[in-house]
Amino acid sequence: MSAGITFEPPCFLISGLGNDFSVYVQDGSSWILLSTDRFTPVAGLCRVIMVLERFLPPPKPQFFGAESSLVVAPDGWGIVQRLPNEDLLKVSMIVDGGNDKSVTFNPINPPADFVDPTEDATQSPDTPPFGKIFINGGGVWNGIKGSLINFIYTVNGGAPTASSVAGFGQESGPLLNNATITSFVIRLPSAKGYWPLNNFKMEDGMSLVVLQKVPGVYYVAAMVVDGPIPIVGLTDILQTSS
Image 1 (cartoon, rainbow, N blue to C red):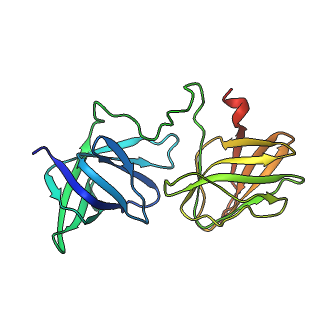
Image 2 (image 1 turned 60 degrees about the vertical axis):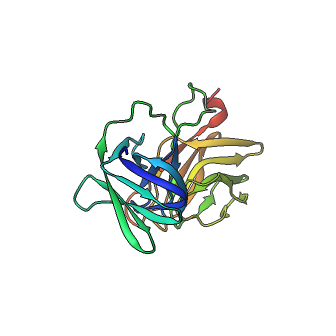
Image 3 (image 1 turned 90 degrees about the vertical axis):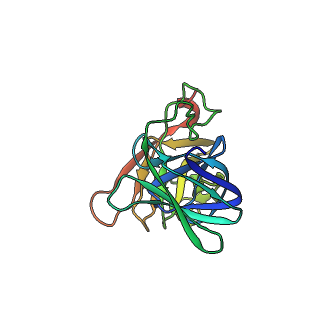
């Protein structure tokens, strides 16, 4: 048997690496993004785990290969862990009515047949890489007079969701936890989409404000507990990607 974990469905995994890392496991021939706060169904043979440090611009994938084999019967539950003081991962599973079984994953080179699961297949090759804003426990406020705004976001890699529309001095809800903001929509008066120019991680519990520098030029100001307020520029999606 080749090294790896064979998950006999249904089995479930969660990431224990925290919100700074995106963790992908092989699910047969495809890749599955794990959540940090809810279990994700997995099936098939997992030989490789990919980890992305989310706040590097751009993120650089690390690959880890299984060093032994394990077959997990249906109804197995487990977690991807990083071994203390070592550049190794471990998948720990509760199986057979309460037994703890694990497989260590060692650093490896990218697989020869690797296809990046984070790439958007519908995106034009000429479209430049836009950033994302990572926010936990904060909100988004409209600081542009005479405008309406909202934004598009995901939570733990889930489906894109549109926020509510907010006028000047209002919050475009909801309060965001473990969320990724991918774009903003500014109506002044017609609606246009804007993307962050670079990745930015908000301080926990802090909110941001969407502001206008001059007509047609927008940015977000990220509130911080101490020090200068960071600025993230926004770019017009339609103009940039045309």
